[in-house]
Length: 297
Image (cartoon, rainbow, N blue to C red; front, side):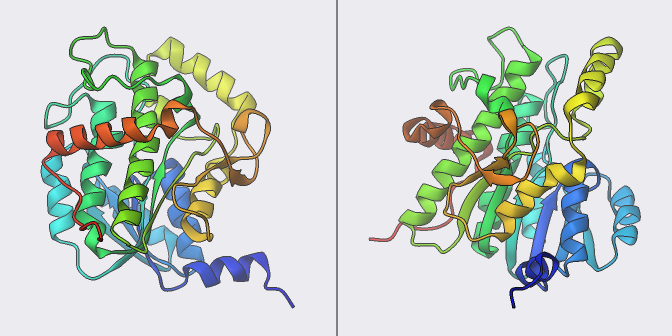
């Protein structure tokens, strides 16, 4: 007799160690809750440890809270340096979006590219020698209107545009996944790199919008969005199912707005291996963090 869905999910997660960035709200919290419910050992990597501990107390299961601010490379390094033992799955979930004006990280990067891409780039490479199974990075359909300008990644020369900046950071997530997978294969590592997107799901990405645009966005979202739990399903699918490296998971409904997890497509730019390599090189220069595994002969 085939296992039930619940039993199968538990078999894929029980006793395994997961790190989820931004796990104190929205999609990250929904992901943490489901993994903990299925017996995983879940580490909530969050900026506000006190808030994270209150949330972890309600999750039950095996949970732990650790401080991590992806907008500060010093915090990223401290998190990685304090890590003990192996890590099965890293879920790069945290993100900021829809910032009406250009803001900077502690290291001077534009906040959306600095948090959504560069912070996770550094974290992944610093933890990679400890990771045994996979890295899942949460991207977005917004990558479709993103354009990557490697000469001005931090919007220092171009007029800042909030949606274009967010789209660029999500495009960077997919290019990062593509090049990470290439490097893992070249080094004969068993680790896989995958990406997922939630469709239109309840989250706090609109919290930085002004009152008028915030109300409009919320009203439109109410009509089409799915719950945070449904939005987390593609991430959980990518984190637990036997999928090829560089897979991209999203909802199967019209326009990938909502639905059940399935493999989805990406733009031509998001699948450009040369652009992915050049972004990786630039990311190493900006963060001072390099790929830690050696390519095999």
